[in-house]
Length: 135
Image (tube, rainbow, N blue to C red; front, side, top):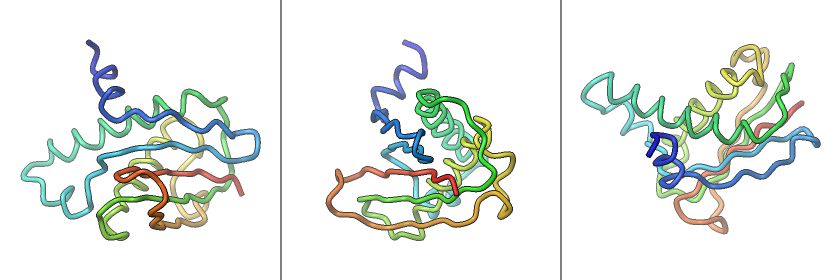
């Protein structure tokens, strides 16, 4: 089994394909908290987390037509047991992957105008929905 196949069976959740209206949505589970990420004993563990989630995010982005936006916002909606501020790693992984995919030239404030993180108990427990919004 390829590494990507095992990741799909572990974390893959189908995307909502709405790129025509200026949004791209991805879904993830098992995001490490900010505390967990930086408490890792070695940089190689952090790199493994980053690489794993980059692969998952890029696999979902491949379901959308390639496009580059001049400005965007990121909305995170989750039903995790983490404090909202500990969910920032999801935003970091998502923006880095969106940039690598070619969705934005850079993840600086010139291109990423806002970020919103909200808790929604109505979505599946353990799920995080990341929506890229063209502005």
